[in-house]
Image 1 (cartoon, rainbow, N blue to C red):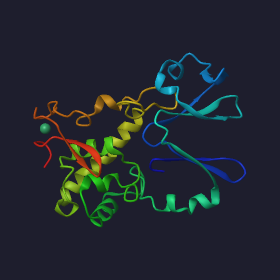
Image 2 (image 1 turned 135 degrees about the vertical axis):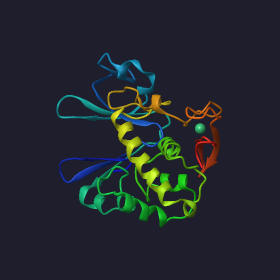
Image 3 (image 1 turned 180 degrees about the horizontal axis):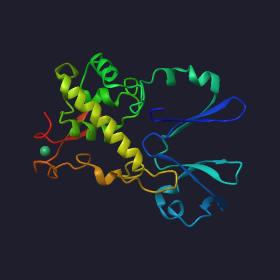
Image 4 (image 1 turned 60 degrees about the vertical axis):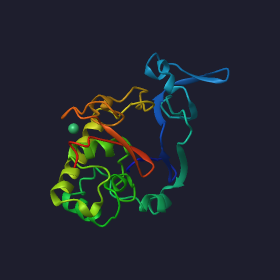
Length: 234
Ligand SMILES: [Zn+2]
């Protein structure tokens, strides 16, 4: 749900997992050697140093394990009564998932127009729409040709439609390519996500825009770096 992972366990319990900035879950087999947990498989989990910051290992019935690697240790895992989790503030306050099939253009439009502030900050607010982080907000706004600083009130109907369409297309593609590994992110097999090759503006400050050759700019919005083309985006 958005950026939250919910694993339903037996006995009416659920795990609520948020990987935060640098955490990622992996599925594999590890054994403890001295003080270190070492992967028993010759694959990316073993080869890539980013997969070695293990903080938690769950044992599964089939002999495999689910492990959390997190270099900066911001990730959060909580055990909940399943019945209480569904009605908890953390879940109820979330906006609809960005890829939810019930989130039509008209619903999206209503939700967005109800908010104040800069479009980039609103897109990243998990209580408005759940699931859009900093990287994808930058990429969505580039594809929609809208500057991240734009106040909601200044957006035309067409621009909101372009943002909606870019949001759906980019997130679908990103899921298909297993995410963006511009630094630390890895998938469940410890592999890098390939969306990094699709990035048009994120972390491309001062590099030429792929459309117009103008330099990509960077500024801070809602305490996060924003990257955009001052020529293609209005
Ligand atoms: Zn451009």
